[in-house]
Length: 194
Image 1 (cartoon, rainbow, N blue to C red):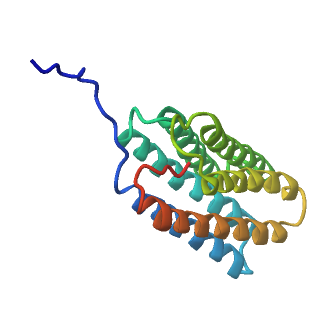
Image 2: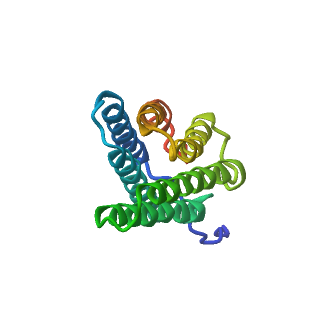
């Protein structure tokens, strides 16, 4: 008589995760190029672009973490996604209704970017379970945290430099996400992005 194994629920990664990574990458690349190429960008639009990126990336990450419940790091994914979604969305609303000064908006944005990047670093270093270590998500999360530090640095200075640096970092993040999604995740659906 054959014995049955326990009916524990096997959790597998979403085979279409690479598409969502590609969408995030294209979105980040588009925002980055907009900031780089539009020299007439007002300082508030830099904050809007970064807050929009946080909101969209947070929404996608929250959605994907709900699809991949039970996988290593899914709880951190959900928390990180909610930080981006709620924090970025709240910042957009506060900026839209002109509740915050531009300095306060940049301070809040810097804190959100650093928290979002730090949660991604935590996940990559400590909450990946038995998954193989991957360098690209680590680089992307370091870039996000560095972007938050740049926002802190430039918030009291001429914001033209922030526009260039934020555009360059967002474009690098977009290119990294596109490359990772297409070259790694498409071939190996179990590879996580952040």
